[in-house]
Length: 299
Image (cartoon, helix red, strand yellow):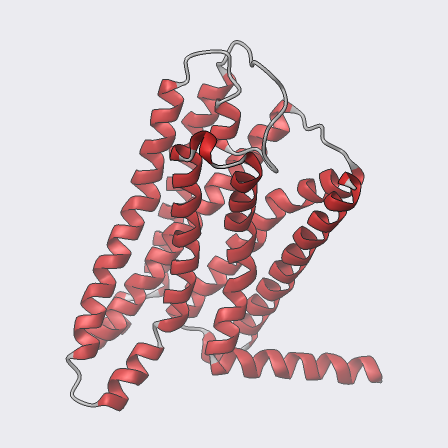
């Protein structure tokens, strides 16, 4: 019975992973091929798709090996590496969502300055900054974990190597590690979320100031895909964070695991679907690519 349960869990993980990979690869292909999509918003989207694919790849293969092949062992160094990639890519994704909200703010609130502000060089600089932020801010967490003299157990009560899940295993004072993890969560995700909300307050004010209802709907529709993505990402992140930090013994361990898995696997799967459904150019390019592939396959 337990074996069968693991097989079903592995099937769900595999489905999410395959859909995330295929969806984000198709999104990257559509954006690179279609010249009409070579705009700042879609450049951010292509960076987000790359981050989502790498985030899924950093955890899903090991989860599948656990569920299907019972390969539960992982080297300590590999565990730290997985932890580093996991938190770095989630930090990068948070920053990219902030960049996309900034793009929408400039496009709607300062349309005449859009071309001079949202240039390719600005996007490259912002991406490098977000990448360096993710790497430099989370590196101390890895160093502090390596300094633990010993651990109470080597059994990780999680589907992957998450920071607090590993810290809680240490047979030492973990207050510094816990405080650092909390500070990073507020410094990165909290700050990004705050600026996203501020930008959308300005966007909503500008949208509802438009005289025509059709103009308001058309402008607002350009923000819907991004709103859906950041709501799913931050909604799951906040819910998972609060349940893990303050749920204590009131929430069963398997609920923590399901929430954490949903937070890391579902957004990468949903993001290309949301933009594919809401963006006509992406739909048309994907349909064209699939038609070309089918015709070549038939020949």
